[in-house]
Amino acid sequence: MTTTRICDVEPFRYQATPQIGDTNASTGQINDQFLEDYLNRLREAICDDIQSIIAECCNGGPTPPGGVSTFLELTDTPAAYAGSGGDVVSVNAGATALEFTTPSSAPDSDGLALNFSTSEQATNRTWIGGKTIYQKTVDCGALPNAAVKDVLHGIVTLERVISFVGVSRNPTTGQQLNLPHLAIASSSFYVAMLINTGGTQIRLQTGTNYTAFTQTYVTLFYTKV
Image 1 (cartoon, helix red, strand yellow):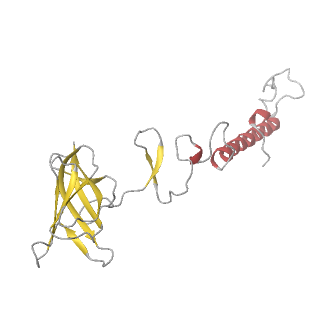
Image 2 (cartoon, rainbow, N blue to C red):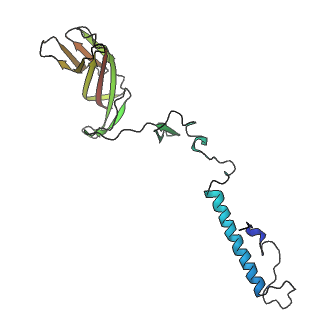
Image 3 (cartoon, rainbow, N blue to C red):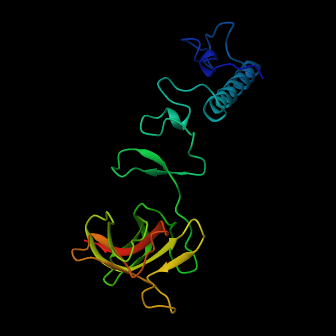
């Protein structure tokens, strides 16, 4: 079908069009055949116009002036996809733009929806009164030699620690301890764990030399003010 824009078809092309029934009409007076031809051309032009509009707007036609054709060309989106495979698009913390973020995991068997991380995360659980329970894992390094070690947890506006657990590993032997730890063989083979006065630090206390256990992590579940 030859594309003909509707503005190129009578009566749009001419300022005057012969009128049916005009007794003084010229040789170009509309008769039945002329009218039929005219309507056919008009119908064809309208169909062509619609088809052209659909092709331009819906099938990869030219980008409107000043517009964009990809997500990355927007001014409030990331500049590249590299390094963001599997991420999702979300609104940033300042609610001013879009960014790529790693999706949270689905709830596991105990109802928590998180991956262990040294960054603070909100869980899908709440404490009494409806406050959100947060989770954070703190790298505490090596255990002390029959001594006390305090490690800052870095949590801002901490209100209440609901629970905390730890694990420590000796990378040379592969031996691991769940924290807190108490051995049956001797009362001195213990690792005590608490949140110190003021609530800003994790306190680890050992009854013997555990310095070979250099990979110690403590995970806290807590609410915030």
